[in-house]
Image (cartoon, rainbow, N blue to C red; front, side, top):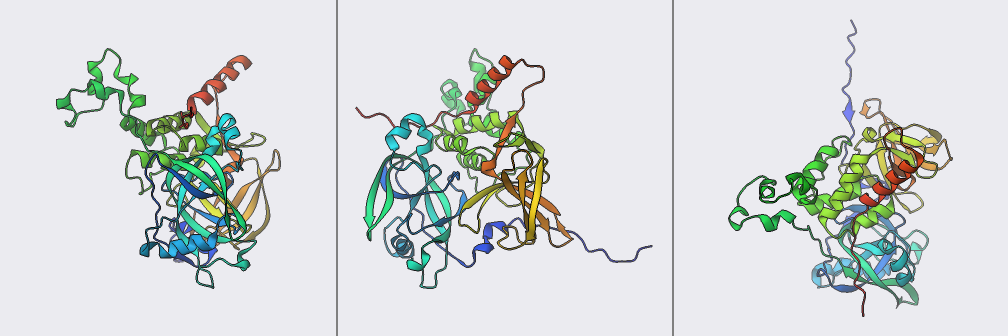
Length: 421
Protein backbone atom coordinates (compact mmCIF):
# COMPACT_ATOMS: atom_id res chain seq x y z
CA UNK A 1 0.00 0.00 0.00
CA UNK A 2 1.35 3.41 -0.99
CA UNK A 3 1.67 5.44 2.18
CA UNK A 4 2.91 8.64 0.50
CA UNK A 5 0.85 11.69 1.32
CA UNK A 6 -0.49 13.19 -1.89
CA UNK A 7 -0.85 16.93 -1.97
CA UNK A 8 -4.28 18.17 -2.98
CA UNK A 9 -4.65 19.91 -6.31
CA UNK A 10 -5.11 23.66 -6.16
CA UNK A 11 -7.42 25.51 -8.55
CA UNK A 12 -6.11 28.65 -10.22
CA UNK A 13 -7.20 31.85 -8.48
CA UNK A 14 -9.34 33.61 -11.11
CA UNK A 15 -8.92 36.91 -9.25
CA UNK A 16 -5.20 37.12 -10.11
CA UNK A 17 -5.32 38.11 -13.83
CA UNK A 18 -7.42 41.23 -13.18
CA UNK A 19 -4.68 42.57 -10.89
CA UNK A 20 -2.32 42.88 -13.89
CA UNK A 21 0.75 42.34 -11.72
CA UNK A 22 2.95 42.16 -14.84
CA UNK A 23 2.42 45.93 -15.24
CA UNK A 24 4.16 46.70 -11.97
CA UNK A 25 2.91 49.12 -9.34
CA UNK A 26 -0.44 50.71 -10.18
CA UNK A 27 -2.17 53.33 -8.07
CA UNK A 28 -5.92 53.56 -7.60
CA UNK A 29 -7.88 56.43 -9.12
CA UNK A 30 -11.37 57.51 -8.09
CA UNK A 31 -12.73 59.64 -10.92
CA UNK A 32 -15.73 58.78 -13.08
CA UNK A 33 -16.80 61.11 -15.88
CA UNK A 34 -20.51 61.46 -16.51
CA UNK A 35 -22.34 63.41 -19.19
CA UNK A 36 -26.04 63.90 -19.78
CA UNK A 37 -27.55 61.36 -22.15
CA UNK A 38 -28.12 62.87 -25.59
CA UNK A 39 -25.65 65.70 -25.02
CA UNK A 40 -22.82 66.66 -27.38
CA UNK A 41 -19.41 66.86 -25.72
CA UNK A 42 -15.85 67.48 -26.93
CA UNK A 43 -13.38 64.88 -25.69
CA UNK A 44 -9.97 63.52 -26.64
CA UNK A 45 -9.97 59.99 -28.01
CA UNK A 46 -7.51 57.15 -28.44
CA UNK A 47 -7.41 54.31 -30.93
CA UNK A 48 -7.22 50.84 -29.34
CA UNK A 49 -7.07 48.46 -32.36
CA UNK A 50 -9.93 45.94 -32.53
CA UNK A 51 -10.77 46.38 -28.83
CA UNK A 52 -14.39 47.39 -28.25
CA UNK A 53 -14.74 48.72 -24.71
CA UNK A 54 -18.22 48.08 -23.31
CA UNK A 55 -19.79 50.04 -20.42
CA UNK A 56 -18.66 48.63 -17.05
CA UNK A 57 -15.88 46.62 -18.70
CA UNK A 58 -12.30 47.03 -17.43
CA UNK A 59 -9.37 46.79 -19.86
CA UNK A 60 -5.69 47.79 -19.71
CA UNK A 61 -4.34 50.18 -22.32
CA UNK A 62 -1.03 51.86 -23.05
CA UNK A 63 -1.45 55.57 -23.82
CA UNK A 64 1.32 57.20 -25.81
CA UNK A 65 2.24 60.87 -25.28
CA UNK A 66 1.29 61.46 -28.92
CA UNK A 67 -2.25 60.14 -28.29
CA UNK A 68 -3.33 62.19 -25.29
CA UNK A 69 -2.07 65.15 -23.32
CA UNK A 70 -1.03 62.89 -20.45
CA UNK A 71 0.27 65.58 -18.14
CA UNK A 72 -3.05 67.46 -18.17
CA UNK A 73 -5.13 64.30 -18.05
CA UNK A 74 -3.31 62.88 -15.03
CA UNK A 75 -3.28 66.24 -13.29
CA UNK A 76 -7.06 66.39 -13.70
CA UNK A 77 -7.35 62.88 -12.30
CA UNK A 78 -5.26 63.71 -9.24
CA UNK A 79 -7.17 66.91 -8.58
CA UNK A 80 -10.64 65.56 -9.33
CA UNK A 81 -11.74 65.33 -5.69
CA UNK A 82 -10.89 68.99 -5.17
CA UNK A 83 -12.51 70.22 -8.38
CA UNK A 84 -15.56 69.81 -10.56
CA UNK A 85 -13.58 68.55 -13.58
CA UNK A 86 -14.61 65.35 -15.30
CA UNK A 87 -11.45 63.73 -16.62
CA UNK A 88 -12.13 61.25 -19.34
CA UNK A 89 -11.51 60.29 -22.93
CA UNK A 90 -13.07 58.07 -25.55
CA UNK A 91 -11.77 54.63 -26.58
CA UNK A 92 -12.32 53.92 -30.28
CA UNK A 93 -11.81 50.48 -31.87
CA UNK A 94 -11.51 51.84 -35.42
CA UNK A 95 -8.87 54.35 -36.55
CA UNK A 96 -11.09 56.74 -38.48
CA UNK A 97 -8.73 59.70 -38.81
CA UNK A 98 -10.73 62.75 -39.83
CA UNK A 99 -12.98 61.06 -42.40
CA UNK A 100 -16.07 61.11 -40.20
CA UNK A 101 -18.56 62.08 -42.91
CA UNK A 102 -17.27 59.48 -45.35
CA UNK A 103 -17.23 56.71 -42.76
CA UNK A 104 -20.75 57.63 -41.62
CA UNK A 105 -21.91 56.62 -45.11
CA UNK A 106 -19.85 53.45 -45.58
CA UNK A 107 -19.21 51.98 -42.10
CA UNK A 108 -21.26 54.06 -39.63
CA UNK A 109 -20.68 51.62 -36.75
CA UNK A 110 -16.95 52.52 -36.83
CA UNK A 111 -17.96 55.81 -35.17
CA UNK A 112 -19.13 54.18 -31.93
CA UNK A 113 -16.89 54.50 -28.90
CA UNK A 114 -17.03 54.49 -25.12
CA UNK A 115 -16.17 57.22 -22.63
CA UNK A 116 -13.45 55.74 -20.41
CA UNK A 117 -12.49 56.50 -16.83
CA UNK A 118 -9.03 55.76 -15.46
CA UNK A 119 -9.32 53.42 -12.46
CA UNK A 120 -5.64 52.48 -12.05
CA UNK A 121 -2.55 54.05 -13.53
CA UNK A 122 1.13 53.22 -13.64
CA UNK A 123 3.08 54.90 -10.85
CA UNK A 124 5.65 57.32 -12.25
CA UNK A 125 8.91 58.23 -10.48
CA UNK A 126 8.08 61.92 -10.84
CA UNK A 127 4.76 61.64 -9.03
CA UNK A 128 2.43 60.96 -11.94
CA UNK A 129 3.45 63.61 -14.46
CA UNK A 130 4.20 62.53 -18.03
CA UNK A 131 7.60 63.66 -19.33
CA UNK A 132 10.04 63.17 -22.19
CA UNK A 133 11.08 59.76 -20.84
CA UNK A 134 7.57 58.49 -21.57
CA UNK A 135 8.13 58.78 -25.33
CA UNK A 136 8.03 55.39 -26.99
CA UNK A 137 6.19 53.51 -24.25
CA UNK A 138 3.61 55.86 -22.77
CA UNK A 139 1.72 55.22 -19.56
CA UNK A 140 -0.06 51.97 -18.79
CA UNK A 141 -3.45 52.23 -17.16
CA UNK A 142 -6.61 50.27 -16.43
CA UNK A 143 -9.73 51.99 -17.71
CA UNK A 144 -13.43 51.36 -17.17
CA UNK A 145 -16.10 51.88 -19.79
CA UNK A 146 -18.64 54.46 -18.64
CA UNK A 147 -20.96 55.69 -21.38
CA UNK A 148 -21.27 54.73 -25.03
CA UNK A 149 -21.08 57.50 -27.57
CA UNK A 150 -21.10 58.28 -31.29
CA UNK A 151 -18.53 60.54 -32.95
CA UNK A 152 -20.20 63.29 -35.00
CA UNK A 153 -17.11 65.33 -35.84
CA UNK A 154 -13.34 65.01 -35.56
CA UNK A 155 -11.42 68.12 -34.55
CA UNK A 156 -7.85 68.92 -33.56
CA UNK A 157 -6.60 71.00 -30.67
CA UNK A 158 -3.14 72.21 -29.79
CA UNK A 159 -1.44 71.11 -26.60
CA UNK A 160 2.13 72.31 -26.07
CA UNK A 161 2.78 72.35 -29.82
CA UNK A 162 1.49 68.75 -30.10
CA UNK A 163 -1.62 67.93 -32.10
CA UNK A 164 -3.98 65.71 -30.09
CA UNK A 165 -7.07 64.04 -31.47
CA UNK A 166 -10.37 65.42 -30.25
CA UNK A 167 -13.90 64.73 -31.34
CA UNK A 168 -17.45 65.82 -30.84
CA UNK A 169 -19.39 62.92 -29.37
CA UNK A 170 -23.09 62.29 -28.87
CA UNK A 171 -23.65 60.54 -25.53
CA UNK A 172 -26.05 57.72 -26.33
CA UNK A 173 -28.94 56.83 -24.00
CA UNK A 174 -29.49 53.32 -22.67
CA UNK A 175 -32.99 52.25 -23.61
CA UNK A 176 -34.53 48.86 -22.90
CA UNK A 177 -37.44 49.08 -25.39
CA UNK A 178 -40.71 48.37 -23.67
CA UNK A 179 -42.45 45.09 -24.28
CA UNK A 180 -45.19 45.28 -26.94
CA UNK A 181 -47.45 43.61 -24.38
CA UNK A 182 -47.39 46.66 -22.13
CA UNK A 183 -50.13 48.40 -24.12
CA UNK A 184 -52.30 45.29 -23.72
CA UNK A 185 -51.83 45.07 -19.97
CA UNK A 186 -54.72 46.53 -17.91
CA UNK A 187 -53.52 49.14 -15.40
CA UNK A 188 -54.61 46.96 -12.46
CA UNK A 189 -52.30 44.15 -13.72
CA UNK A 190 -49.15 46.19 -14.10
CA UNK A 191 -48.07 46.07 -10.45
CA UNK A 192 -49.14 42.45 -9.96
CA UNK A 193 -46.61 39.62 -9.92
CA UNK A 194 -47.90 37.78 -12.97
CA UNK A 195 -46.05 35.57 -15.46
CA UNK A 196 -44.69 37.41 -18.51
CA UNK A 197 -47.06 35.70 -20.92
CA UNK A 198 -50.37 36.54 -19.16
CA UNK A 199 -51.08 39.78 -21.08
CA UNK A 200 -50.47 37.91 -24.34
CA UNK A 201 -53.74 36.06 -23.89
CA UNK A 202 -55.52 39.36 -24.36
CA UNK A 203 -54.14 39.42 -27.90
CA UNK A 204 -55.23 37.37 -30.89
CA UNK A 205 -51.61 36.29 -31.45
CA UNK A 206 -49.71 33.42 -29.82
CA UNK A 207 -47.83 34.29 -26.59
CA UNK A 208 -44.68 32.84 -28.21
CA UNK A 209 -44.72 35.69 -30.71
CA UNK A 210 -43.94 38.25 -28.01
CA UNK A 211 -41.10 36.43 -26.26
CA UNK A 212 -38.32 37.62 -28.62
CA UNK A 213 -39.27 41.22 -27.80
CA UNK A 214 -39.56 40.90 -24.03
CA UNK A 215 -36.32 41.64 -22.18
CA UNK A 216 -37.09 39.23 -19.33
CA UNK A 217 -37.77 36.35 -21.71
CA UNK A 218 -34.60 37.13 -23.67
CA UNK A 219 -32.43 37.15 -20.55
CA UNK A 220 -33.95 33.85 -19.39
CA UNK A 221 -33.30 32.19 -22.77
CA UNK A 222 -29.74 33.50 -22.94
CA UNK A 223 -28.93 32.19 -19.47
CA UNK A 224 -29.92 28.72 -20.68
CA UNK A 225 -27.65 29.02 -23.73
CA UNK A 226 -24.54 30.26 -21.94
CA UNK A 227 -24.44 27.16 -19.75
CA UNK A 228 -22.77 25.37 -22.68
CA UNK A 229 -20.11 28.07 -22.78
CA UNK A 230 -19.61 27.82 -19.01
CA UNK A 231 -20.36 31.53 -18.74
CA UNK A 232 -21.57 32.96 -15.44
CA UNK A 233 -22.89 36.56 -15.44
CA UNK A 234 -20.46 38.95 -13.79
CA UNK A 235 -21.25 40.38 -10.38
CA UNK A 236 -21.30 43.86 -11.90
CA UNK A 237 -24.52 43.05 -13.85
CA UNK A 238 -27.04 45.07 -11.86
CA UNK A 239 -29.79 45.07 -14.49
CA UNK A 240 -30.68 43.73 -17.93
CA UNK A 241 -28.76 46.46 -19.73
CA UNK A 242 -25.59 45.69 -17.77
CA UNK A 243 -26.13 42.01 -18.58
CA UNK A 244 -26.38 42.79 -22.29
CA UNK A 245 -23.08 44.71 -22.25
CA UNK A 246 -21.35 41.95 -20.29
CA UNK A 247 -22.60 39.37 -22.79
CA UNK A 248 -21.44 41.43 -25.79
CA UNK A 249 -18.00 41.74 -24.18
CA UNK A 250 -17.80 38.02 -23.34
CA UNK A 251 -18.77 36.33 -26.62
CA UNK A 252 -16.14 35.51 -29.27
CA UNK A 253 -17.41 38.01 -31.81
CA UNK A 254 -15.45 40.01 -34.42
CA UNK A 255 -14.86 43.69 -33.73
CA UNK A 256 -17.32 44.99 -36.36
CA UNK A 257 -20.11 42.93 -34.78
CA UNK A 258 -19.26 44.11 -31.25
CA UNK A 259 -19.27 47.72 -32.44
CA UNK A 260 -22.80 47.26 -33.72
CA UNK A 261 -23.81 45.67 -30.42
CA UNK A 262 -22.30 48.64 -28.59
CA UNK A 263 -24.38 51.04 -30.66
CA UNK A 264 -27.59 48.95 -30.63
CA UNK A 265 -30.75 51.03 -30.36
CA UNK A 266 -31.91 49.21 -27.25
CA UNK A 267 -31.11 46.46 -24.79
CA UNK A 268 -33.63 44.23 -26.55
CA UNK A 269 -31.88 44.65 -29.92
CA UNK A 270 -28.53 43.76 -28.32
CA UNK A 271 -29.88 40.71 -26.50
CA UNK A 272 -31.74 39.41 -29.57
CA UNK A 273 -28.55 39.49 -31.67
CA UNK A 274 -26.53 37.73 -28.97
CA UNK A 275 -29.19 35.04 -28.55
CA UNK A 276 -29.25 34.28 -32.28
CA UNK A 277 -25.48 33.97 -32.31
CA UNK A 278 -25.46 31.69 -29.26
CA UNK A 279 -28.02 29.38 -30.83
CA UNK A 280 -26.27 29.11 -34.20
CA UNK A 281 -22.52 28.94 -33.66
CA UNK A 282 -20.84 25.70 -32.64
CA UNK A 283 -17.10 26.25 -33.00
CA UNK A 284 -14.34 28.84 -33.37
CA UNK A 285 -12.40 29.06 -36.64
CA UNK A 286 -9.24 30.79 -37.74
CA UNK A 287 -10.28 34.20 -39.05
CA UNK A 288 -8.02 33.87 -42.11
CA UNK A 289 -8.23 30.29 -43.41
CA UNK A 290 -11.41 29.24 -41.53
CA UNK A 291 -9.93 25.99 -40.21
CA UNK A 292 -11.65 24.72 -37.05
CA UNK A 293 -9.83 25.51 -33.79
CA UNK A 294 -12.13 24.86 -30.82
CA UNK A 295 -15.68 23.74 -30.13
CA UNK A 296 -18.30 25.86 -28.43
CA UNK A 297 -18.11 23.78 -25.25
CA UNK A 298 -14.30 24.02 -25.02
CA UNK A 299 -14.32 27.41 -23.26
CA UNK A 300 -12.81 27.67 -19.79
CA UNK A 301 -13.11 30.71 -17.50
CA UNK A 302 -9.69 31.77 -16.21
CA UNK A 303 -10.80 35.15 -14.83
CA UNK A 304 -13.76 36.48 -12.89
CA UNK A 305 -14.83 38.25 -16.09
CA UNK A 306 -15.41 34.89 -17.80
CA UNK A 307 -13.93 33.50 -21.00
CA UNK A 308 -12.72 36.80 -22.46
CA UNK A 309 -10.12 39.08 -20.89
CA UNK A 310 -7.70 41.80 -21.98
CA UNK A 311 -4.02 42.41 -21.27
CA UNK A 312 -1.09 44.49 -22.48
CA UNK A 313 1.73 42.71 -24.30
CA UNK A 314 5.41 43.71 -23.97
CA UNK A 315 5.03 45.90 -27.06
CA UNK A 316 2.35 48.02 -25.37
CA UNK A 317 -0.61 46.70 -27.40
CA UNK A 318 -3.85 45.63 -25.76
CA UNK A 319 -4.66 42.01 -26.53
CA UNK A 320 -8.03 40.39 -25.91
CA UNK A 321 -8.05 36.62 -25.58
CA UNK A 322 -10.68 33.91 -25.40
CA UNK A 323 -9.59 31.05 -23.13
CA UNK A 324 -10.26 27.42 -24.09
CA UNK A 325 -9.20 24.08 -22.58
CA UNK A 326 -8.27 22.42 -25.86
CA UNK A 327 -7.60 23.35 -29.49
CA UNK A 328 -6.91 21.61 -32.78
CA UNK A 329 -5.09 22.44 -36.01
CA UNK A 330 -2.44 24.53 -34.24
CA UNK A 331 1.31 24.35 -33.78
CA UNK A 332 3.02 25.31 -30.51
CA UNK A 333 6.41 26.98 -30.85
CA UNK A 334 8.92 29.02 -28.88
CA UNK A 335 10.62 28.55 -25.52
CA UNK A 336 8.29 28.41 -22.52
CA UNK A 337 8.67 31.54 -20.37
CA UNK A 338 7.04 33.23 -17.41
CA UNK A 339 8.26 36.68 -18.41
CA UNK A 340 5.34 39.12 -18.60
CA UNK A 341 2.89 36.27 -17.99
CA UNK A 342 -0.74 37.32 -17.68
CA UNK A 343 -1.57 34.27 -15.58
CA UNK A 344 0.68 33.96 -12.52
CA UNK A 345 1.85 30.38 -12.10
CA UNK A 346 1.79 29.61 -15.83
CA UNK A 347 4.47 29.69 -18.53
CA UNK A 348 3.46 30.56 -22.07
CA UNK A 349 4.40 29.60 -25.61
CA UNK A 350 3.12 30.80 -28.99
CA UNK A 351 0.31 29.25 -31.04
CA UNK A 352 0.30 29.19 -34.82
CA UNK A 353 -2.43 28.06 -37.22
CA UNK A 354 -1.45 24.94 -39.16
CA UNK A 355 -3.55 26.08 -42.11
CA UNK A 356 -2.24 29.59 -42.77
CA UNK A 357 0.56 29.99 -40.17
CA UNK A 358 -1.19 32.98 -38.60
CA UNK A 359 -0.29 33.72 -34.99
CA UNK A 360 -3.38 32.76 -32.99
CA UNK A 361 -2.38 33.22 -29.36
CA UNK A 362 -0.63 31.32 -26.60
CA UNK A 363 -0.51 28.01 -24.75
CA UNK A 364 -0.24 28.19 -20.95
CA UNK A 365 1.32 25.38 -18.89
CA UNK A 366 1.14 25.22 -15.10
CA UNK A 367 4.53 25.45 -13.35
CA UNK A 368 3.26 23.62 -10.26
CA UNK A 369 2.10 20.07 -10.85
CA UNK A 370 -0.70 20.58 -8.34
CA UNK A 371 -2.17 23.66 -10.05
CA UNK A 372 -5.30 23.14 -12.15
CA UNK A 373 -5.95 23.39 -14.98
CA UNK A 374 -2.64 21.86 -16.07
CA UNK A 375 -2.80 23.75 -19.35
CA UNK A 376 -5.13 25.96 -21.36
CA UNK A 377 -5.00 28.18 -24.43
CA UNK A 378 -5.58 31.86 -25.03
CA UNK A 379 -6.86 32.60 -28.55
CA UNK A 380 -6.49 36.18 -29.72
CA UNK A 381 -9.98 37.55 -30.19
CA UNK A 382 -9.21 39.26 -33.47
CA UNK A 383 -7.83 36.05 -34.99
CA UNK A 384 -10.83 33.77 -34.41
CA UNK A 385 -14.41 33.91 -35.67
CA UNK A 386 -17.53 31.97 -34.64
CA UNK A 387 -18.55 29.35 -37.20
CA UNK A 388 -22.22 28.89 -38.03
CA UNK A 389 -22.86 25.38 -39.34
CA UNK A 390 -25.96 24.71 -41.50
CA UNK A 391 -27.64 21.34 -41.67
CA UNK A 392 -26.16 18.78 -44.04
CA UNK A 393 -27.42 18.22 -47.61
CA UNK A 394 -28.01 21.85 -48.62
CA UNK A 395 -27.24 22.88 -52.19
CA UNK A 396 -24.75 25.74 -52.89
CA UNK A 397 -27.66 28.12 -53.52
CA UNK A 398 -29.32 27.07 -50.26
CA UNK A 399 -26.05 27.47 -48.37
CA UNK A 400 -25.64 31.00 -49.70
CA UNK A 401 -29.19 31.87 -48.68
CA UNK A 402 -28.64 30.30 -45.23
CA UNK A 403 -25.55 32.39 -44.47
CA UNK A 404 -27.05 35.61 -45.82
CA UNK A 405 -30.20 35.19 -43.73
CA UNK A 406 -28.30 34.41 -40.53
CA UNK A 407 -25.79 37.21 -40.98
CA UNK A 408 -28.58 39.74 -41.56
CA UNK A 409 -30.67 38.41 -38.67
CA UNK A 410 -27.83 38.63 -36.14
CA UNK A 411 -26.85 42.21 -36.96
CA UNK A 412 -28.57 44.55 -34.49
CA UNK A 413 -30.32 47.77 -35.41
CA UNK A 414 -27.92 50.44 -34.20
CA UNK A 415 -28.17 54.14 -33.45
CA UNK A 416 -27.80 56.66 -36.28
CA UNK A 417 -27.27 60.39 -35.88
CA UNK A 418 -30.23 62.24 -37.44
CA UNK A 419 -29.32 64.10 -40.63
CA UNK A 420 -29.34 67.86 -40.26
CA UNK A 421 -31.40 69.89 -42.71
